[in-house]
Each structure stands twice: as C-alpha cells, then as structure tokens.
Image 1 (cartoon, one colour):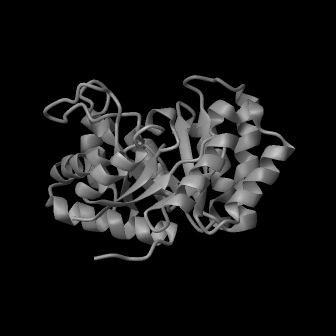
Image 2 (cartoon, rainbow, N blue to C red):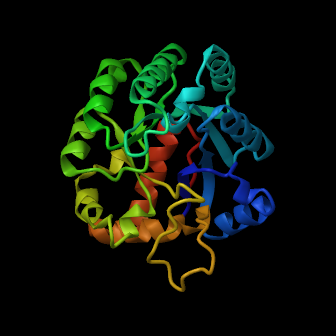
Image 3 (cartoon, rainbow, N blue to C red):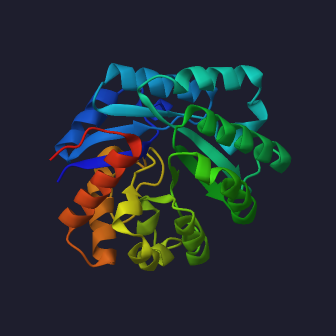
Length: 265
C-alpha cells in the first residue's frame, strides 16, 4: 500500500540527528515519497537540499509561511524564484494567511501571500497553501489567481464544511492530516472527508507536528513522523466508508498527478 506524504517538515531540528532512521521507518510503513515543506527562507533552502540528497524519495516546496511574512523582502523573493526553478521543487509554499497567531501583521501577510501567488503564476507551479482563521480574506485573494496557476492544495485542512465547499468550487485539492484523529477539535473532519472527491484528496502528516492522538500504543514522545501516514490513511478510509487500499491508491495517484511525480504501483 504505497503512500505519498505531501507535507512533512523534515528540515525541522527534531529530525537532525536521526533523519535516515525516520526515512527507513517511513519506507517500512509504505511511505515511498515525501514532499518536504519549505516555510521560510532557510527552510526552503533546507527542503531543497534534502530533496537533492534523497532523489526520487524526497521532493520540496519553496515558500514563506504567514508566520514569517514579516521577514519577506526582495532578496527573499529572488531566492524563492531561484529555488523554485529547481526540478526538485514541486510547488510554491507554504504560503497563505494565519489570523490565529498573527505573528506577522495581517496587512503584511496579505501582501506577502499575493507576492507568492504572483510567483506561482510566473513560474507555473502549483500552490501549497495554509489558512487558519482567515477564510474570507484568503478565499478572496486566491480567487483572483486560481485560474492562472496549474493547481492549489489547501494543506492541513481543519476548517468548516462551508470553507471546504468553497475550496472545492475553486478546483482546489485538500490535504488531510492527523488532525482528523483529534477528538478535541477534529471530529467534524470525519464527516467532511466524505465530501472530498477522490481526485482532490491528498494525505499528509505535517511532521513533526500533529502526532495522531489515536495511535496505539501511544509513543512516549510527541514527535510525528511520516511512518504514521499509514495510520492517518486508515482513519480517513474508515470515515469515508472505503477500504484503506482504496484511500491509499486514490490519494497516491492524486499526489502523483498534482506534484508531477512518477507513478508507482
């Protein structure tokens, strides 16, 4: 049951000492390929370096998360443009809006999000998107550019049914994480995943964040890893009322088409 993890922050410091073991465990659990998220200037550089060091297994995105929008300048944009021209970089992002934390002022987030939307149009790369507590502003800006980019995935979707239907109406893909396993805040997703067409659904861990709370036995640590994608896939399959093999095959084929990965059996 080969899987593709479309969002793993493998450049995170928690993976510095044992990345090879992490990748081995991922392979042992069927996760054949992973897209390493670039969420800052340095993070995007690191994501590309990891992809180059593990050809065919790791791929990358390049972008600036709204938390880091305050650091975005002309030099950052030049860097992202250079990185995104590398064949290992398969999407622009992680970019979007986050009004939950507001680590960067909202007006700055909006400006930087639009700059990266324009970059995706220029380079004809799909978008790897983040949105939290900012749906209306996010949707309004995305609508202006969606028709000019080859694809867009709303990564780590945690929002409402109304938001989901808005994104599907824009022909966006949806990334589902272990948030669906969280009985405190993710139970609504168990209903909503049934509404996502198979050719729009992708799955991800967002490692090292969002360790699925339903993993048993519960690991002593709180670090999430790509190996747990198999568990997330099984949970989503149960909620969709289909065999895990069907969810795995569908999400893998969708990820392969979206990121331009070579199809596997």
